[in-house]
Amino acid sequence: MFINIDDDAEPLMDFLGDITKHFERWPFANRWKATHSAKIVDSNWKLAQEAFMEAFHVLATHPQMSIGLLGGDGSNTEYNIYDNGDANWSRMTMAPPMPNPNLPYELTEQELIEEMFFRGESVSEMGVQKMAGSVDDLPDGITTRKLLADSARKNEPKGFVGSEPTDVELTSAIQYHIFPNISPWPGPIFYRHRPYGRDPDKCIMEIMMMVALPEGAERPPAAKINWLGPDEHFGNIFNQDVENVAQVQRGLKAAKPPGGLTLGNYQDIKVRWHHRLLEKWVNREI
Ligand SMILES: [Fe+2]
Image (tube, rainbow, N blue to C red; front, side, top):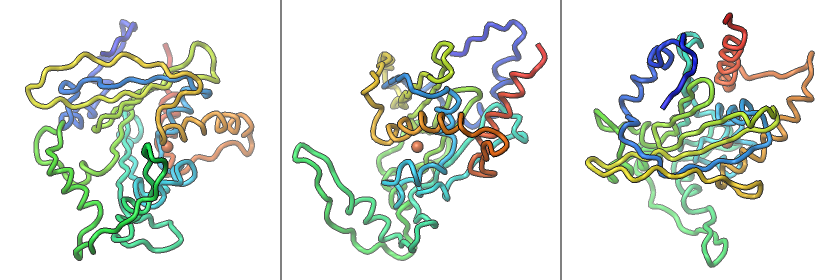
């Protein structure tokens, strides 16, 4: 639900623009809020959100992913802004799992799948255990991504409307942002970042799981918000992002002109989109 206290606000559908067409494929009307966690994070709300606007940070922040899961350093990520950056929404698509072209050695599809599933570690009551094993040789022309897409297809993926889900839809992390502060995924993840009162050095970060309901299923009650304490965490990968942002905020404050801050031309295009819109709204005539 969107509420706007401005009597002169433009219609919501005009503000949202064509993103509504994209989500005809994954309608939110068929979803329910299965989980909802929130945490007060030590950074400005814009900075915390921007940690999820590019995949450039993955190589440094999530080194355990460098082999396959997210394509390592984001080389396999596409960023989209629309209407020359004037649209109030944007998208990124991380296309895993593909051999990371920036690893200092060449990785075959066979090695990729073995690294992902058989050379890692698993954690159980028995402690951390090395996984051991291998997969049969992949047939020629079959990629890890194709194998995972076919496996997902067999499990009757939910939430799609229209044609059969494509390999990209079944294996990629597709993430949208709607200005200024919400981020719905076609998958179940949904982020929201809010200011924490008037403190510019803190924010409220929220992660929800908006799960597609099976056809005809009764909608369970929406999950209540679960406030995490300072020593509680969202989960392994999210933790790494959250740990980082307080340091990045200190770094930004230290980055005074003329050196200042340099944003990547492509990898940071969504961050630049976000700030361009912020300036437009903050400086607009009222
Ligand atoms: Fe991250």
